[in-house]
Length: 187
Image (cartoon, rainbow, N blue to C red; front, side, top):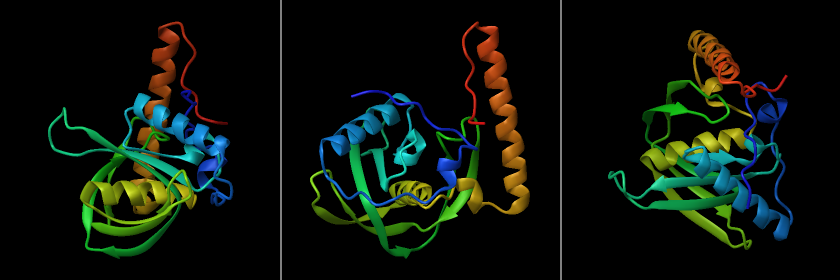
């Protein structure tokens, strides 16, 4: 298990539709373990494979099972997902590990029914509600080459991109002040 570097915008892998997983083997197991460790290290709720530079239809999620800070976390490994149904509506402030330093309010379905496979290749159908539904849709979008900023109006997207560029510049400045290499977006 290893922590993999998280790809940041504008790396083109984030805007490319991911390929289905065709082999449930040791390489997949290693990738899933690394993704979980990377997501946990970054304190994210979810992580898509393309966010670690792998263009496969996989994402992981780690969601608290309760409101309490100490609530246990339930982990999900989602392979080749398909959204079967969407219901309702929820507005939620989303952030993204590939867009560090910004968050925006996005409207999504409040409930999704998802068909997917686990690491052994077993098919699962599950309904996700609330924050879990938001996370599923956010990570599913990544697999389609869509970012949460694509869900914003053109004006809000421009403002968010301006904030993102400012946050990345600040991170570079802070890192240089501390005498270490800066967080740099792909160029």
